[in-house]
Length: 268
Image 1 (cartoon, rainbow, N blue to C red):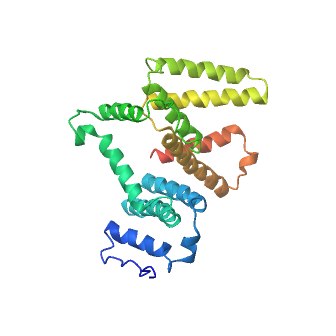
Image 2 (cartoon, one colour; image 1 turned 60 degrees about the vertical axis):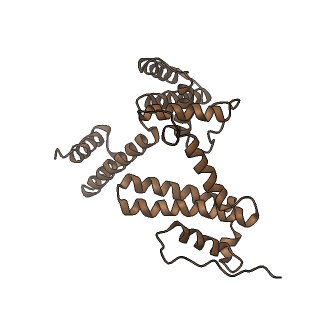
Image 3 (cartoon, one colour; image 1 turned 30 degrees about the horizontal axis):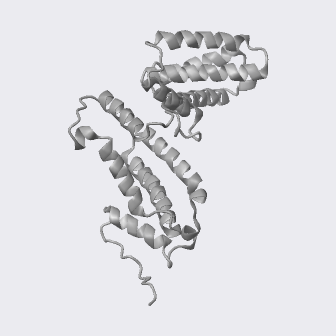
């Protein structure tokens, strides 16, 4: 008897998760899309990264419609990887759902059991303790993806070390360390030494950000955006006045930059 290859019906209500899952299954089914059926975890990898960054950009925009759309694109990537795995026999859609569901229940005993957690910090501490109990012999820094942006990786590994008690007692320690590292950078004599010392400066800055509750990636992204806006004004004014930035001295450039800052602050 031949296997039933009748496509799974698509529910009419597209707001339901079952409809999206049925669409993905149809795309990866025997009569589905040739492109989708050729995809692998490796071929989809760059799309997941791209969609994640597009979601971050949408979140920064503060526009709900854009966030909803990009969340859908990220969810699509999760389901595409699940469909690839189901098609190749690695695991099924349900395995993805059950594992995260079980993890959420296990790590929220203050919600699903009789543990207590009154603040967000209590929850964070409990989460780390429970993670460590799940894998008692696992090094604390194991599992931090090396593919993370370097600043995010630095904050993540330092955060884990801090929660293990490896930290200065207050902000004064890392601030003093930053001053020390900047001095060492200034005194470095070779390219190799300068690169190493510069890395140490960034590492301490990441620690300071985490200690102050600052997301280093987000803070730098905002600083980049601010520079883009202000430099755009400087460039615009220079063009309007037929000036060549490369030929202007530092005082003239600084004057334009000061104007851009004042305009952005509403002082002009």
